[in-house]
Length: 151
Image (cartoon, rainbow, N blue to C red):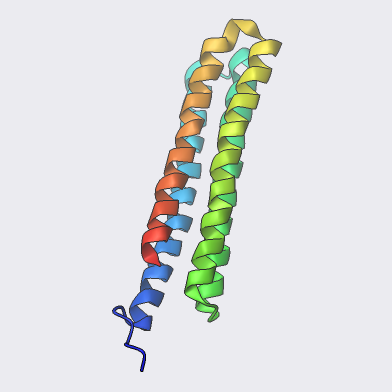
C-alpha cells in the first residue's frame, strides 16, 4: 500500500495558484515600473529627441517582455484553475519564464549595442537603460524560483 503524500493535494493546488498569481502580479508590476522609469526620463529630459528613442525602445522592449511573463503566468493560472495537473503546469511555466529571462538579457545587449553603434554619444545612457531593463531578468528568476518551491 502506498503511503499518503506528505502534502495534501488541495494544499499543493493552493500553492500553485498563489505562485502563478504572484508571477502575473510580479511581471505586471515590473512592466509598470519600467513604464514609470521611461515616463520619468521623458519628462525630465523635456522629450529630447536624442533620449526619446533609446528610452522608448530599450525600456519599451523590457515592458513587452514583462507582459509576456505575465501572460505565461496567466496561462498557467488558467490551466490550474481548469483542473490540469499543477506540477505539469508549473513546470511549463518555469520553462517559459526561463526563455523570457533569456530574451530580456538578449534584448538588453542587442538594443544597447544597436544604439551605441547608431549614436555613440549616448552610449552611457543606453547602457544605464539596459541595466535597468536587465533587472527584469532578476525579477523573472525570482518568480521562477517561487514556482519551483510551489511544486
